[in-house]
Image 1 (cartoon, helix red, strand yellow):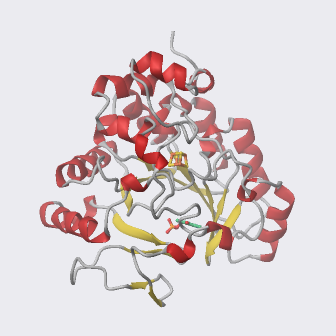
Image 2 (tube, helix red, strand yellow):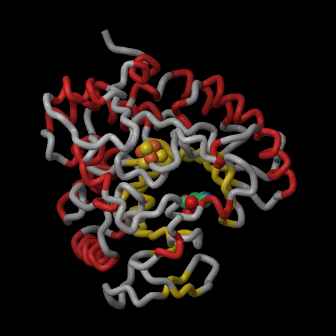
Length: 350
Ligand SMILES: *Cc1c(COP(=O)(O)O)cnc(C)c1O
Ligand code: SF4
């Protein structure tokens, strides 16, 4: 019998011994938590232990090599006025209702924070409400995490009701991997909730895909169900060395995203994450790949290639038509120029 999505979470592999039994292989490092739902584990096994899915989700030796990685690579802490809220851009704020995800991605930019009682993840609604009251310029709340769709429909409803009195907030966005990792999460209760609240909020959802090979019938169906409610579906992907850092993988990915009917939104340059530096690649390499995509694909099928400048300066375009080398200057979305070294960001190490 098909498990409910809650059961899929409850039966996920979390222990080294479970992984070793299932994959018939030992993994040398376990410096970071493990969380892999069994359906995903089966998909990984089918593809093979050197495939792009294994690289994204199974623990790897390289995680022990910290290199130049950062614990808070995009500087969220500087922009967190109150616990569980990050306000970096004028009119939109990130809200973290949970620090749990349906899978533990090995490249995660929060890999040094999730489940660790990080100050970002402590606190309650009250101070968030006070902050939103004092900042009427915020018109969009982006539920991130963790994965907001790991919450029950009841909890999501409570969060939306909590936001309802702030009349300036007209848009709600979910950043999630749930439709990809546990497609059964897109259940009728969620669709009903979105439908019911669509008079009050304009909804969008950015769904995280990195490789076309993860897409199967269940995922396609989950997306089809989502299309029945008023919501704009976006994609976001991370460029990852060894997973999708080649023209064909990216082309297939963006074509699949188009077939699913999502609007391509962001391709993130990888962050310099402690314990995930083996996924990192230089901007120059990413720019060359992106350039090839533009030569061979229609512009509307390609997401924006962006880079979160270390230290909390925000997202800047990573694409540079004039040359592939990084000259040390990044123009942020407010028009300010920052001089920064792509490689030596040791000033931000903590
Ligand atoms: C990425 C991000 C957002 C969303 O930015 P968009 O460009 O609207 O997708 C909002 N707040 C923070 C802190 C972010 O990192
Ligand atoms: S789903 Fe996102 S936040 Fe969660 S582990 Fe993966 S990359 Fe990190």
